[in-house]
Image 1 (cartoon, rainbow, N blue to C red):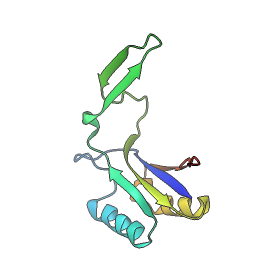
Image 2: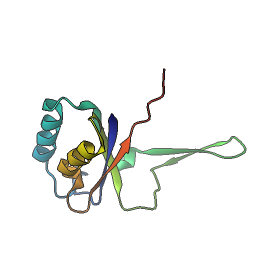
Image 3: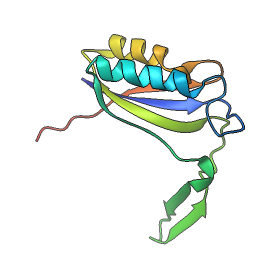
Length: 116
C-alpha cells in the first residue's frame, strides 16, 4: 500500500532547512528509503517565499496571493511516497525521518487508489 509522508518542519534554520537536521541526516534517510526498495517518489520543496496560493470564489473568480498564508507555525518542507505492506511499517519509516525530530512532524496518509 502506498503512503505519503508529509514532512512539516516546526522551525526553520537560517538556511531555510528544518531546525535540528543537517544535510547528512537527510541524505542518510533518503539512502535508507531507496535501499529498502520502498520509495515511490519524494521531493524537497523550494523555500516558502516562493509559494503562491490560488483560491477560487463562489463567483468563479480566481485570487492569487504570494505565500501560503497558513495560520500555522509548521512549514511543509517536502514529502515521500512509499510503498509498504501496512500502516505500521509506514509509521516506522515516518519515525525514522529527520523531519519528525524536535518540533517537526511527519503526517502519514494513505494514497487513494482508484480502480482503473
